[in-house]
Image (cartoon, rainbow, N blue to C red; front, side, top):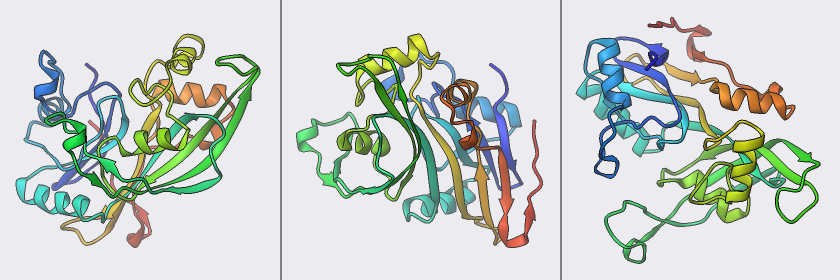
Length: 257
């Protein structure tokens, strides 16, 4: 596999672009898999790394890992205490609202107990439509098909929260096999060259646990999503790789492999 793209690195933590389809670490639910982000990054850097948050396997984008257990504890606390600003880009079916707060409680999906036994937990996601398009093709029962580019900001951290919230509101993410609609997923896979979940983590902002500065990390899209946005006329919304410390008024030093 090609090396992971490093977006930011210092002696305490590292941020990488996680490819779609790559598991973060070994899981009992993914027996037989041999490729994992944690092991790959450990071999790439030559040192242990500690994941402090999660991204679903089909989701791509920015992921932060600590380089020591003490920093991992600090970063994990920041994520659990909702002190980290997160933004995602998603391509969804339909013309999404210009702006909305999705406030639907969600049952945890841990795979160990029936859903009926899992308590519903508060969950909140802010969404904003960045662009939309109407294609003159009949994908479903209508003579044309509408799709939107949505920015999502999860304010809580429930499993599959963005995917479930958007589906619940009627704007499922394209490529979502569980919460989406297969006919639209097939159209994007077969006609638009996008056979994956069209959800990417593009932005993280948090206080560095040891350096005392605000760290803002942006992550560009992979080739599949970049080509799709360009094809749909949404290239102006493509994010770029960057890491900045606004408090210092200048970009931070980037280290790449």
